[in-house]
Image 1 (cartoon, protein in one colour):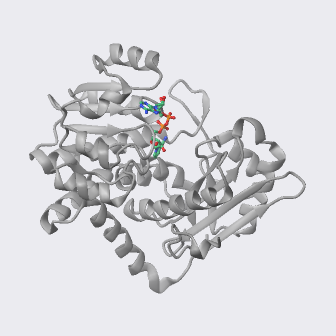
Image 2 (cartoon, protein in one colour):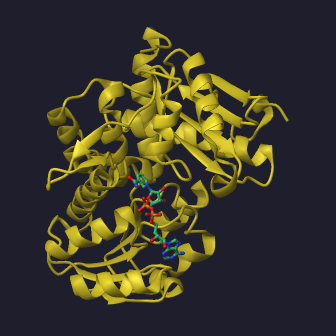
Length: 359
Ligand code: NAD
């Protein structure tokens, strides 16, 4: 199957199949859209069942990055890359450097960053061979120690602002005090989000596959732990998926007992029909690529030429964007997903006359 025939092909500008004979690297880089600027997106490494599955993943992820950057007001396009293989077994410095050479070969049309299976340290290895690597600067933490850049705090804060905005639209009041929120997944983002919500006075129900982690955090925040399979049916105002993608399918959509779905997880719905199902049940779904953009804004600073104030302004603006999407969806009787995609596309079309751009 060629990329053009793939069901996830969406007019992507470039799809590069990378093979480095010496190291054995096999990878795919997808540049979806550079009308707003160079494409930025993480590099994911995982053992795909076959190369067609890897192609589908990278095409979908690259497209989502275009929408995410467009809605976050970044002058950046969308791209993504995948390395085929098991990160625990197949990740070698030679392969990472080879990946860097392929990124360099794109001449700045694609900036690589971390993603699942690829950490900041791995991107630094790629950066030996390319100038186009994002999110690798070290920063000082509050104790003065040098640490790797971490997008999670910015993501969690953006999601918090987005939840406030959704509450404002649904209940006419953004306040969390007394609101009931279920948080699924207490990792880098979910744990921070839960802490923000608790601080703001929300009542929390939390779960994680790692039971001990859930118990410790719940004790600290005064939250109630529920079993992972029970989190969908807790009666709450907000359900915040912060674990994996694809957790809400047609069946789960019928069992949710919330008014709002708003969380960090990428692609939490299995497909667009589920967005229609949720809307039919009166559940407001906040599109993931609108609410979880804080991390990419943070990482984008170098690629998009933003200073710290510019980064902070765009993270805070996530609330305004969510509000605009939900208000318009309600006024026009469309799903928030359809409205968010249309808003992103409108920004891309306005930039069309400039043609493809590079750094
Ligand atoms: P993470 O791996 O640190 O945390 C995920 C947590 O979910 C883990 O603690 C895991 O044990 C738990 N989990 C997995 N499956 C579960 C299940 N079925 N039920 C309950 N818990 C489960 O990941 P993260 O960085 O916190 O990211 C969370 C989600 O947000 C991911 O989907 C990620 O793609 C998305 N996201 C993250 C960022 C970021 O800045 N880290 C940015 C944008 C989107």
